[in-house]
Image (cartoon, rainbow, N blue to C red):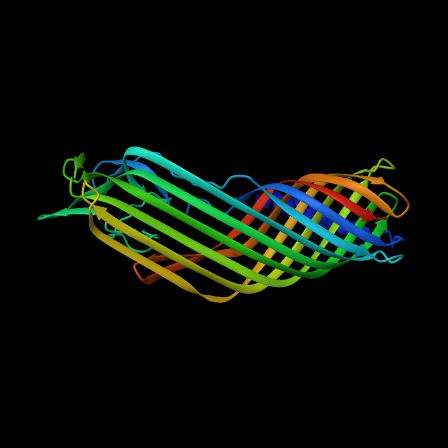
Length: 373
């Protein structure tokens, strides 16, 4: 996905540089520019952060972790965008206001006869691990008797859910130039605002058995059925300068053309995150024996998020009269917000570590537009 973003961006920059070779300002009659967009995109960077539900056999230090099964990949969902602007007569200048948003949610659930919670690297969620080996610090799923540690609690089910929201508002001033007879390029600059939310939660449920260290077998444990839950949320909102270029090459007088664009922004704002979890142990009648809950809220702090968007598509325009044309555009677009998600991993009430990651969206789009010409 990142490679595709680079290719689209390079194409857009090349079209912009070509405009400098032979350019003239079009003589717009002036008027409104209106567009409505539907997109179908997937979010990247927000797959399950809590690991997998895997089958485990063997003895400590030599556990056989079978193929992991809990992966909460985000699905493709519909989003929308609208824009309205005004082209100033005879100048090639315009002002445009654009807004877009999308919400992507997903739920996954899995069951197994005997599983154990592991992270992406196959590390067990147990309190004997160091924070670096146990990034989510899920503890207390060890089984003890009078002789000490004897095994790991086994799990029978797991569920994970996620929700990602993106809202973007841009106000830009543009300058359009004609390059030859077939290419038109618009340069723009202005102010952009974005709000990004990521929420995710996972639950692991025990099956009343544990993995015995001595025999390597699953042993029924009538006194312990463990349920573990983990969740985190992250929010960023910020505003800053945005610049971009898009170009359209039309094939003669057919109205059919190819369009490519790139937009770069530097968003300055606030980021905050929170994490919470619990571990509950019950007997076989689901009477609570013990419960341990923990939570951590990261304070809001200043944060800078560079953003880059690019698109490539086909466009068709039809002139209604000398002043306006209607058109349809279809293609593929990508958006990437760098270091826009902060995840806080905690153990009880103490902060363990905080990491940031990118948040990206990619997918096809369809746009209907009315433009001054």
